[in-house]
Image 1 (tube, rainbow, N blue to C red):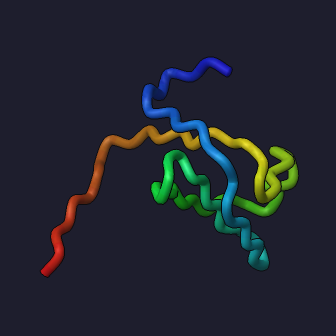
Image 2: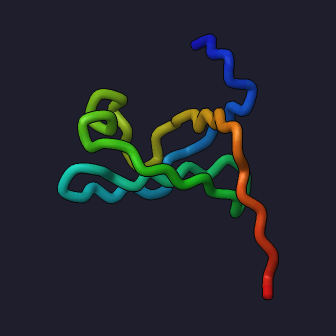
Length: 70
């Protein structure tokens, strides 16, 4: 797979929760480092995502929010 996005993180699907239309996918990219994404249930099916399977989180954004504790 070739993409223009430089932020690509390969990992393991550690959580998958389908809702009515969308689902939450959690991908562990390093020990205790999990990226969470909301995608359509149709995309989950088309990609064949399963817990324990491999996936790549691709992040392409012009804005990143930053916060602090307190």
